[in-house]
Length: 78
Image (cartoon, rainbow, N blue to C red; front, top):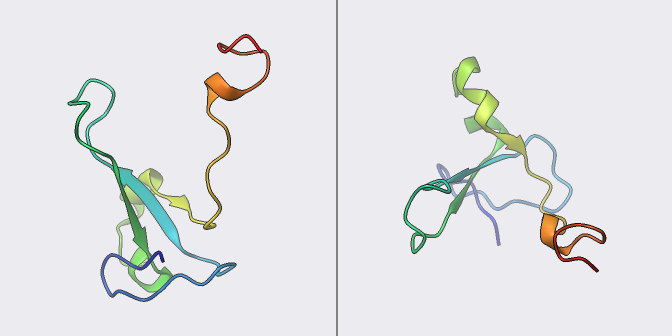
C-alpha cells in the first residue's frame, strides 16, 4: 500500500490532496537504476516551497495509462 514518505500515513483510495513525484535518473542515466515514486500527504506537501511544487503531480492511486507504444496507431503499428 502507498504511504507518505515523511510520516508513513497510508494513502486511502479516493483521498484528495496527496501528491507524488518520480525520482531517479532520466533517460540519459543508468538503465539499471529503477525510478522511485515519492508520495506526500497533504500536510507535508504544504511544507514544500511553492517554486518546488511544479515537480509534483496529484496522486490518484490509479495505475498509469498505456504507454505510447501500446496505443493503437502509434509506434507498435497495431
